[in-house]
Length: 257
Length: 233
Image 1 (cartoon, one colour):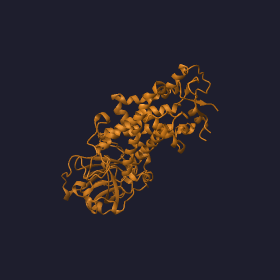
Image 2: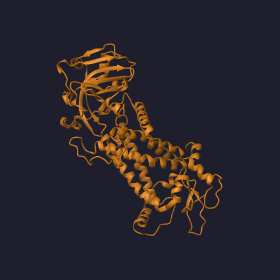
Image 3: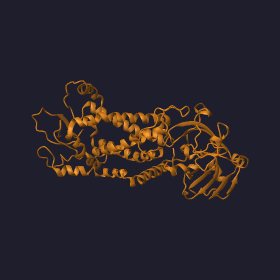
Image 4: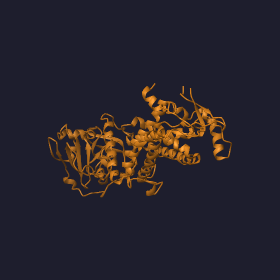
């Protein structure tokens, strides 16, 4: 039996509560009171006011992002699919926002690491490759609605952050890219054991369109969080004003799966 | 035991007494849903337009080529997602209010379609579509209404659950298994929307045919000249 008081409130029937019902219709004060009970719905009209709409919708997205953060479970691993479920390499889409193959000086490429780390500086691909390699067949989900299972390999972000001596109290990891794309992540996601600094797809070094020489692979995030062509990585306590290329355009910042 | 028993009214000789037909929670969630389902559908169509296919990305076979602005919301994918992610909370809250209140009050017994209602469906269909005689009212809702309401509630629940799977396919992977994972959940989400929308034209036609008193009772809760009476215990 549910809470009796709640039950009584929900089941209350004014026609039996002693309210006088005379002739063909209930008294107007009764119907008026019943009408007033619907008045909170008027608040939805706020969305029709152009001056309020954007702020209300922004609040809705932030609320959803905050709730998403509560959903996140560090130890809940993303399913790694059997090899037969992986789409062929040529069916893994290339997505980019302005150029597919930005100019990068590959022989001299380094990842510039800064912010709240004990050992800032430039890290070479070999240093990143020297960390234990993780591979998995995970589902890549695009905000547009399509999804593909691909094979990714790289160094765990948690290992890299340990190597550079990231401040354990830091809250965010931000990256910038060779194509002026930029992203930021909550530290919980960066520390998730399947979050990779990815340098391989399908067992081969990343090709340029997929983000050579280094990209993020985050099986717990939508595709647009998984920045390609990484150039810098910072560990921070606050989000920069430029949070994320697409979130700044209006997408969810959290974008967690 | 239900706290009220619905008995067929005797023919016109009886003086009809107004009844309190729709409790507050039913009316509140009804109108909240009228707004919310519209917004979720319109923004959902805009989201769908970003990848209007249920197949693979490569090769991509589009089912539609964009959606008209008049029936979509948000302007672009990001704008539509803002509407969707905001109103999903209101949709869920309205649904929860409805289900909890119906269960707590016992009122669900008047709405839910049970196997006993199966044989009542055809006479109503015959009456509505093939000029058959009008079956005697056996309660607040006839069998066809119960079927429509129950299935629409079911489609609403389905859209919510598949939406959750699409929103959090990793964190809610256990729920995702029920719907065959992210990709299939997206297809089912779309079908559930179609199921909900299928209810609306018939519903609006019936509301129009049944006139003002019937409509007003979804606003104030009170219905004048009901076609049935609520018997007291």
